[in-house]
Image (cartoon, rainbow, N blue to C red; front, side, top):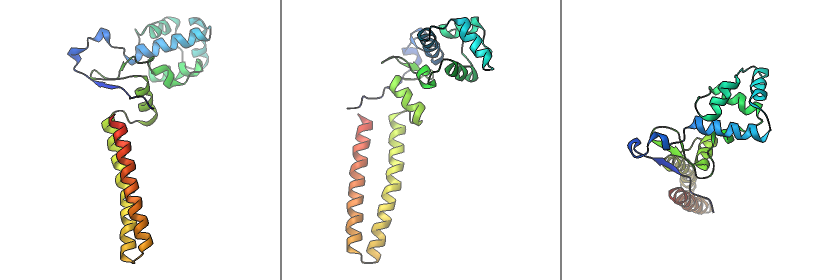
Length: 180
């Protein structure tokens, strides 16, 4: 059984800024966890960044880890490289914690990973993607049915009708899963 992906849309007035985990704060926390797991000092990581052509001073690294500094995309990817980490892991919050992607939109770890991997962030977007896929597949089956009817192909007609029914049922099931 798959867990529901959690995306939240809220009015900013209902969730004070100090209660929100920004992507840069999550990233900084994850960088620190990874650095500590490697038993690397701030100096070691700062030097490794310089060695790979993306200089980042010890103070900047510390501010990044504390969430007080937003690293550039170049720095973030270089840190993932230096720390031998999957970038997605450095961006995702722990457990059910939410990361606020915008002032109105937050996601839990699984939802964020889904969005990073597939670009389908919200249930509405996932339903739209499913609807587009269903339309294309149903068009193909409908064309096969039309061709079979024109040529009086009874077996082809029956096959196309079964395919249309199965496709419709499969997509209904998929949309119900998204809605749960």
